[in-house]
Length: 503
Ligand code: PA5
Image (cartoon, rainbow, N blue to C red; front, side):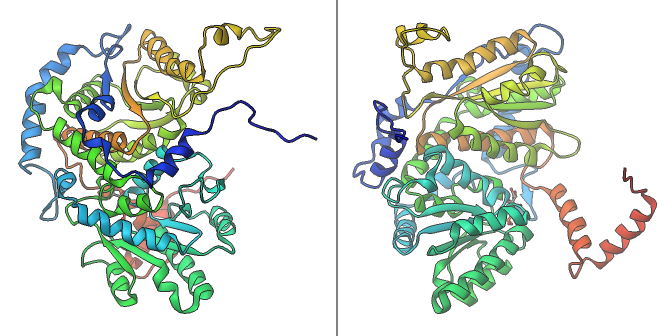
């Protein structure tokens, strides 16, 4: 049997970019031209006056402008319901300006030294200590990263993520991938007490100690709070190289802190460019001119939609690379907005795949949905559609007109946007020009500010997540964690009154 060959398919630009990033001498992202090329647009063509009931009118949004501007000013002045204890949780606002070149150099020095000694890097964390790193990594790297050669990965180790669940099979499968490799771990937890992360850390630390004898501690990085948590104490005692998560930045706002920067530098992602994207969007979203400020517009549209009875936001993308960014938004918005009976359920979706699943519901189901498209305008690669002598599938019209897969993929947004609007679903498209770290930084900052404004509009603190504690307490009580005896007792009493239904 002959081997499958890529014949006349061009070189993969995602790999090319990944390799070249390490050698770039000049930063192009400071220039006006670069910023212009990477401008993120909001397309609101299909947002207003959808056919049928519960539509959103532009007037509804205009009426919100004074409240939105007031919220924006309060946010900029660190005022309002934004405190966790006595700390205003708005450190992310100016963080893009506070990251120094020296700090970036230090991170890169650590990761490049470690990188040369290892074959695989395992990032441990959950929620805000995981999603942003994974999203950025998936957005910018090859879809089968760990299966590429080290050279194709831009001379980086393989990258794995653990500590986001307690599934022993998944854990075991990941261990198989690490077998026989030289590994390093980055354990990320602001509190230091998150069970999923702590258990994953304990297991890997144990295996590392058995494999590396004396130098296991040098293969462990810890990213945690400055002084309070258990992980900080442990890290100081064991001499792990450690990084700090600032007190005034919550997990889901922390992708630009060392939480994200260390893992991204390890994956050869351009962290200067990432910071530059945050800086650029910070500057863009400073204005109180509502229609010039994408964060304010985004927040007001979503709030107007919620008030019009929209309970679900489908965040759909036409790029596999951006699907994890939708997942990052799935955390940022519900964890910040789902308080006191508020908020929309966020459903991340990759189109066209999901159009053959929830597409029917969006078109004709209950009209309680809005849709936000994250549209990648320019893919890394062009895939031509071959012409055939006998046009049995009727697709020669594409090759005859020189239309490639990317062209069709644009219409994987344009088509549903039109059809879903006709079906009564308001939708907006966020146009992301290209896959690069700058654009990721821009999107993250835009969304962080949007959700902060949303907190003011909804009237609750978006920077805390007391609801997440409830599951933790119940789980700790059930697994018999010391200190949770009272909770276990009260659960036992309550459970006696609840009839178990087993069929
Ligand atoms: O946004 C948040 O604050 C949370 O999602 C946390 O990031 C998550 O619970 C993990 O917490 P920690 O970093 O303390 O382990």
